[in-house]
Length: 207
Image (cartoon, helix red, strand yellow):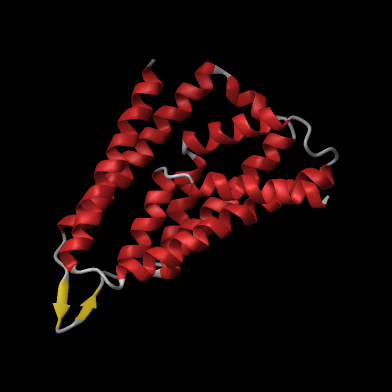
């Protein structure tokens, strides 16, 4: 049980700490809106990671190895990630007000809002899905029995959440020290990254 839990924590942390669309979404949210909205992204990602890893441990991972399924997932993921890029670009174009030394950040993103977006984005992110397929295929029968499989999945979720906790804390600290021009630069870079991921996923989906 202890070994299974530690392995799950490790895999969950590594997957969440890997830079991808959801990581960028969490970091950009923390920089612009603070800790609570950013950790909302992390909670959503951790919930999806837990569910996918549990289903994968039960054998559902084999269903996602079908080329047709992977193409469909990639195309859906491209649409969602592209939408994140458009959303970020729109935010980038909005003016940011500064009163004296105090930066009045936009309040459009809240914990509940980013949680909902993260649930959808992570659930349809093929990088997340295929990443767990690869890990669970490589580890094989790392957990036997429903209770161990569930413990493995939950530990993955906590590992993922811990990684996003670090990202959220760092991003919110960085954001509180940046000027409006730097915040806009981060928005623009994030939007470009989202579009890049979306194009790559679309190409993968049509091949």
